[in-house]
Image 1 (cartoon, rainbow, N blue to C red):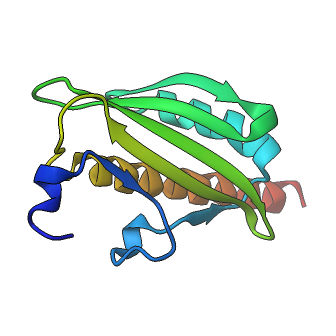
Image 2 (image 1 turned 180 degrees about the horizontal axis):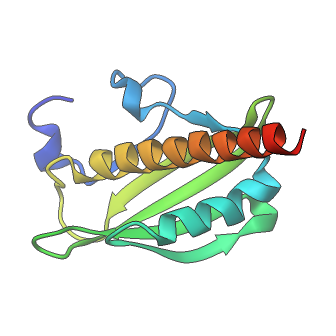
Length: 135
């Protein structure tokens, strides 16, 4: 990201051509039909995040993230697409006001990716542990 981007851009998107590997789409192990409700519960537990709406039939979530100091609200739109691994997660984050975000929307997407990937690994570990206990 060029140093002026934070002053002139107020949005960020996960996309395949991103120079930052943390801003590329990522996979989780649940199919979209289950991923939406699972992700909704996960996101609702995070500080300063709020789930505004879920659209299970379309595989989408609209969430918001509120910045710590100035309490600016950013809209985060998440899409779960079918993937052989489960779901491919695509997302966009955009500021509601201003012409620049000082990189906040990219930070929102990095936090989203880290949080959902960590929760998915933990969920898979619990499932594996349950399978070993019940075997």
